[in-house]
Length: 98
Image 1: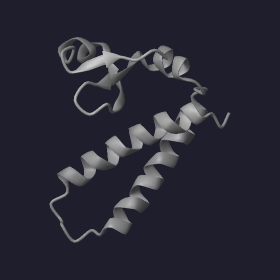
Image 2: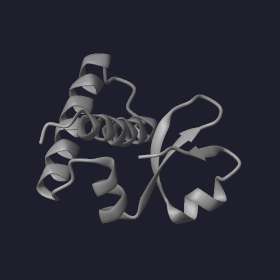
Image 3: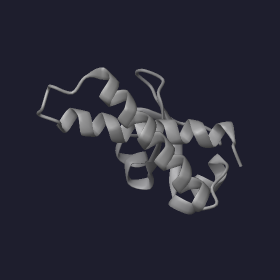
């Protein structure tokens, strides 16, 4: 169950979680090493969570969580979004086949 797709999805989710936490962090004393360590821990948590949920493919993620895989038009980043954001951000994203 060590699918490259699973790790890609986990990495994207972990990066988003850590990025949001870092953006909200008012304490600027954290160094890059701490942030990288947090990113690795978040990545592993997401991988473990998806594995425990029986998700090993993008199709599994889409069906189980009701998410769409998209690419942002401006920077090409891949993300998973819910139906609401699929419509409200339609001008910013393109659906990517799973």
